[in-house]
Image: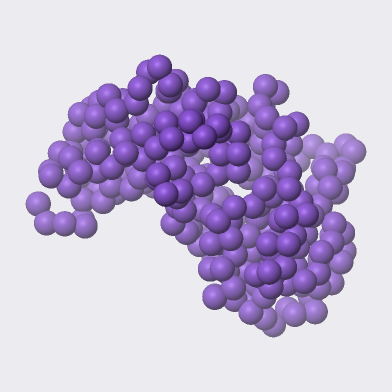
Length: 283
């Protein structure tokens, strides 16, 4: 496994095996089983695998957790070595955003709603850094987790709009035993909070059950989830049911839709989602 922070070295390694397929997993480190599932998928489908570790400052707002975001570099490297990753790129902030940097990528409508509305500038930072990572790695396929559903869709849209020559693979959410979606920020939760957080997935499953029974009203499904979350513990940022392509809010579910949510449990912001697909059963 080769580990570097140098763009020229990454390109040299990449060009040396230009006839081979490369899978790429961009991360901000603090790796968990969700990240590792992406790496394993990349290994199955490609000749070589590259992983980047970079805590991207441009996707954090001024009052967010950039300074304290978990950084576990030695453990991350050990995990990736165990999985026999071929290349780990760990660029510095100065490498990605040198002095005088002023070029950004923005997905206008999709990036302005839900997470984009709650975290202004977030998706501009994501789209910009992912574009730069793609330009250096030049992957055949890139792997993202379904937990960040809007982000995954935004990257698919960006790749299409900007004519990138690569495939985007969206992989299933990996969850803890109690249903909590794996996230690096789960490290902030106490044991008691982790137990309380199980209500998120339970609420999504309650809504899914009513959906499978034939309920198509967004208002009713939304109310079921809200009722399941104890107001003494959870502060809701948003709970929405949206079109799976545009992420625009809908009133009646007629085709694939996502339940997407963001809540605060104490000071920790948690996101999750669930796909509702009318075509999975006969009405």
